[in-house]
Image (cartoon, rainbow, N blue to C red; front, side):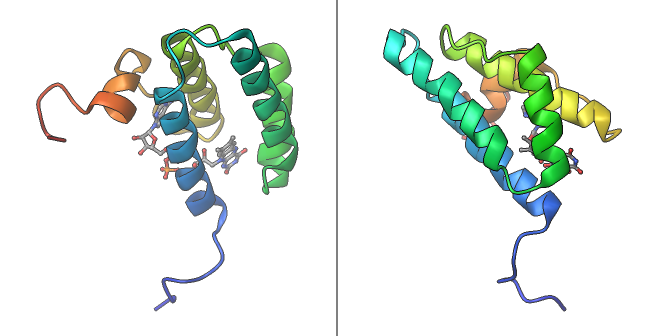
Length: 116
Ligand code: FAD
């Protein structure tokens, strides 16, 4: 069996990275300052250049040009990230996620209480 402490493959890296990105979006401010909005756009610009998977990085940079981050507030930013993740899901032939429930998945837990 493969040791549990090995370099990340593309899927492990992706899963962990989405966990980080969606959680960061869950805790983005409801009323961000102009500086915070600017910095979050810059974060995605730099993130997309250095994401350590070349095809992912290339396609994500292209998608960012078409769909720049909506950094207005927590809700719009989490929704935007959900849509970006769904674009990758479609590209990979995975099911899309219902973005109306993105805060249940990554912030508040499911309404049925299964995360309590
Ligand atoms: P993941 O897609 O990693 O999702 C993790 C969890 O997030 C899911 O279990 C689900 O609960 C939740 N989720 C799913 N969709 C959404 C959504 N839309 N919004 C919110 N939550 C959601 N892999 C490639 O092979 N080619 C690529 O070009 C590629 N590009 C990538 C670009 C980026 C920026 C990132 C972060 C990853 C990329 N990946 C790419 C990896 C790929 O997206 C998956 O992470 C990987 O295939 C593992 O999938 P997974 O089944 O663990 O679920």
